[in-house]
Image (cartoon, rainbow, N blue to C red):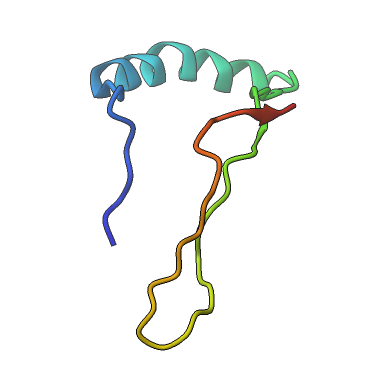
Length: 72
């Protein structure tokens, strides 16, 4: 199974961040600081087609909304 990666991923920026910011964060946590991670999470209302039933030899047609409206 292929590993999914973002098309916008920039390996050089990741390495740079780890060297600069990562070290500083580790130092602060070692000194007793609390590390908090926040993300802009939402629930997409776009449905996922997995499986359905139909008569043998008949391809089922499942209509789903194609927008990326989100619940937050």
